Length: 355
Ligand SMILES: [Zn+2]
Image (cartoon, rainbow, N blue to C red; front, side, top):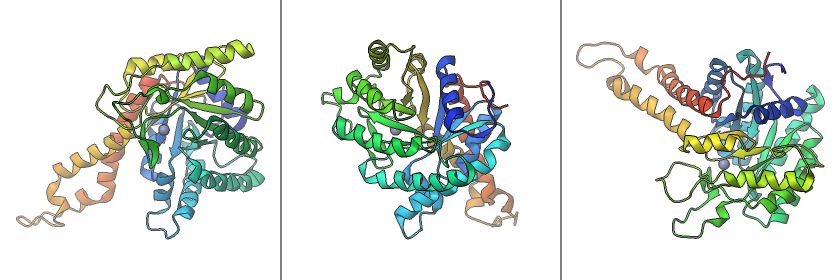
């Protein structure tokens, strides 16, 4: 199986997802906030010969357009559009397949997703492909029928443009860019685990409409916390797959599953989740830290260059050290090194479908 390098959508996207599930590996889905992180993701993917998912939260998209833009909603939309154009232009030259995706959108952010689908409609009319490969709706705080009916409405729009929808069932703990849920260490945390009956309902409603994936909760959390609050239980994913397989007599792993909150997860649980049809694992917290840790080290190693253009004692010029390309590159390299590890954990190294 071989795909053209660059952004994938439609049938190519489906082939990529199926190759992951059949091969027992998953793609890293990396939250990005600007060209530094986007290019670092493509560099990491290319040097590992792995396909990859580049995604933007609403806040990441806003940052891409510029935190100072007066209209915040417009910035969230235009930042995501600008980022997508950047990736469409460059991805093929890195020689790997890239899935372009947006992260959590709760009810308040549905207009953001609809506005991005409007942009994909114009792009599709011109180029025959959508701007984004997929979007996510996270209406997991709502009643299951409200959640699924809205997902069905949005998927109808997206399916016409060869796009896929990621939905959330059950609740991922922690917070991602203002969308999230408190974890109460003392409470009954059963709401953090997806119910297989809900997944079956989603399958029955959405699979006739178009391609979709499910962020199922199995004790995963956003962010990195002290261990112990919630247990990762990947067998919940297995139970959901088994219920759909049994009711609809499908082949193994009929659902496309997504693992949120991959940062800080135990490696053995990641490996187990991969056998249950997980094709995408999100990573944000650990790559944020890796970028900042590397910049911090650079600044500490070159401390004088961050307070003086010229050394006050001996007159040495520090231009070469404070040039922002130097410390931004240090950040990118830290980010890439952490992604090497994620790509190894997910088993996608050497598996790019791009030819
Ligand atoms: Zn998430």
